[in-house]
Length: 463
Image (cartoon, rainbow, N blue to C red; front, top):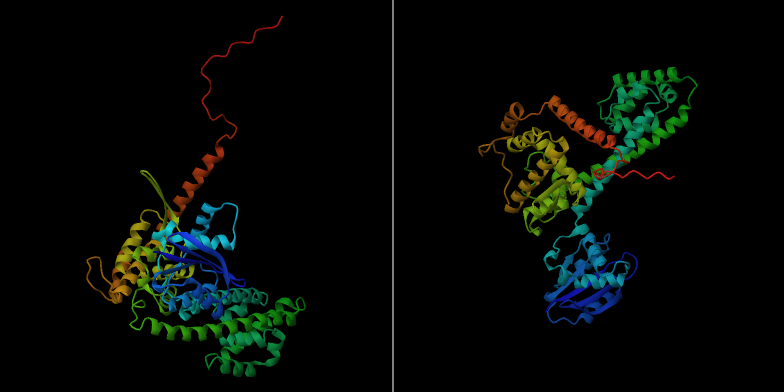
């Protein structure tokens, strides 16, 4: 006997549950909240002799679902996660014009009967895993800081190029502190070179001294000479101070996250199996471990590749088969990290470098080739991770080599000249333009069928 509890999870409203036995709905529309008392009443209503026979099927709805997963797991039930796209397709099969919580819960309860091969027990911690949360949070903060620094660049362009030449593009703590307090050229010149040198030495730990102070004073005087009285430096300095303070705050948060992520990664992968792969640094290894979680929860290596979204779309009918771009159906942060790691790994691993060159020789786009390399790299990392072995660099003959030896092999044999890449891009562009021009030259008013072959009888004249 198969007992299934389908739950339509809500964030603020009440959840709705439906119970099915061997595909037949016993009851549905049972409302409850994520509270101990409500869950205990629901569990009592199930009246189970063996909790291991119960399958709880639900959709991931923000973070409200993970609490229910943890609660039912502790009582021995099997929890199954259903992708939202899959449940939406099955809902359309049942009812095309209705979408209600009552229908959703009944649908999830019937799912083991409709699609049994697609139901796999959920074994991860999801958003309850701190490493998974932190790597995502770090990625979003880095993107926010990049946007702030771009706005800061645009504001500094109003002061002239000399400021950018002195402060550089990295905007360290000393540069951000200076822009927070002394972005006004008039205030900077009044401060004087001696006091500015002491300010810079204090906030840069002695790296910036009198030479930087002199160059900044010269940049401030150049800004005054460029604008004269044509701009309000006080208002501009206030805008720059806001962006600089935000950049400093985000930088401090990233440093704090890096420390927490490093500690959590050491606990999740104490042997450094993921970090042993080429092109995988501390940030990338933490992203891979945090977003994948337990590699054994996937049924195969193909499932891990599919989770990353780096597999091609396939459309097959009979003997015809078309492969398009990647599905992008998996974790976007994992895919982004693997793409960057693949670009670095192909410069060290001769086998990956040979595959990259082979793909580029067929006039592939650089991004397309890197997606192939990223999928191969993920497969190798997952294999080592599941076996508990470190990644071993090997040459084309399978002989273990060091990282230095790998770079010596790759550089003379598998480097792609920029000219070759540009020529391939130009060929693709010419082919696309040629095809588009042929389509544009077609007459849309021309008949779609052949002209008539029969002669047309002349119209008799009317007397």
